[in-house]
Image 1 (spheres, rainbow over the protein chains, first blue to last red):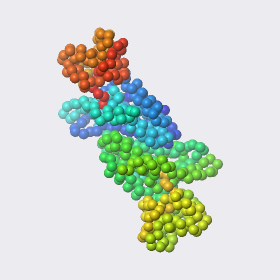
Image 2 (cartoon, rainbow over the protein chains, first blue to last red; image 1 turned 135 degrees about the vertical axis):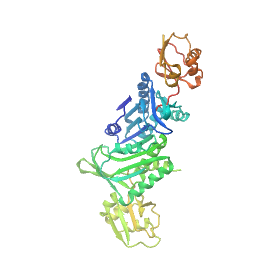
Image 3 (tube, helix red, strand yellow; image 1 turned 90 degrees about the horizontal axis):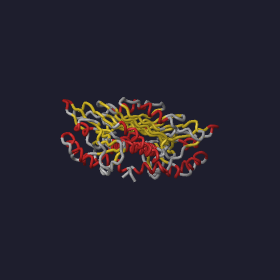
Image 4 (cartoon, rainbow over the protein chains, first blue to last red; image 1 turned 180 degrees about the horizontal axis):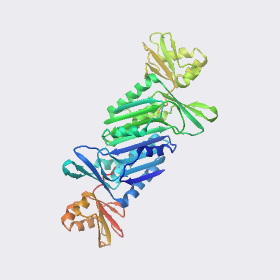
Length: 147
Length: 147
Length: 84
Length: 84
């Protein structure tokens, strides 16, 4: 099972996990990213490169499925304006091996951070805005999976 | 937030994740274990040591919370007779750091495998039964977190 | 008196999940207790004759088999755990 | 003609999200294209004068800035991505 969705609307985590649990692998791992409302942040605006996003995420998922014995992967990434508390991203993996499920989930979220064509703009109280800078740490984490 | 439940009944994964998401950390990881229905297995019977289980899981969760910057941990472990497809165990962690959420989730499930006082008996078609043997690999994984 | 509790196939072989026994001699370890119980023969011998297959807890804490029982109230004997 | 697309603060500085330009000279790299566009001044210069802050894709694949544009149909210029 491979499911990839790039969408503005929220998603049903329970339904995603249920689909992964029903694959019979015995182990399902997930990571959900949520907008933090710190420093007066009132919204995060996610822009992406529509012609590229689906294909890029698809390649990352294929790489994970080649690298770990996975029965299923589900990746959902939202775009548009998201307020604090809103889910941004979901990665779910199913495997017969719990380490495979957890490691591939970590791999996928690390690669989404540094290789999925999304950009985040912060909107603060009072009207100030700021583009989130990429963190060298994120790139290092993604590179750490190589080799 | 620390939530530990040792119970025969199923649980609501969405509600557990929702509670963890609402802590404001930005990252929620989870692992769910499900009964695999292989080799003619019709049920898994989980026995535990009631006087010990809650305290033991509590100590493991405290250790995870001391080791990683976690805002919340939720651990649910079922006992009793569980059929293929049924959830056995859930570990959910919330943190500001996705690596902390994912690593602590892996740590907790590894330690539950080798340090929570549960025993699994397999019931097969035709009436045969068999106690699941502990795997040296599981003990090695848990030991790998030491140091 | 000392409370003993058994789990999984240890419980099944012995045919009971708990019992109370006279306190063992001062200085007796869990391994000494296991040897004494195995000496009862029958299901006890079947369950307890190979201590390498056994794990133990004293008062709800995992301990190694060479731990002295001391003034413990409850000793549990069981196979390696298989949770998660 | 070559399609150019811009994202995030590159798009905001330039003031548009896409445009079509004459094909660059054969052998021209993405870095050459960036330098040429920066030479237009204004928002272009603001967005593109420091190539170390930029990343690029050719026909929806990430490439390094020294990649030759060749017969590509679309070049995208943007800051390092911040997904997940």
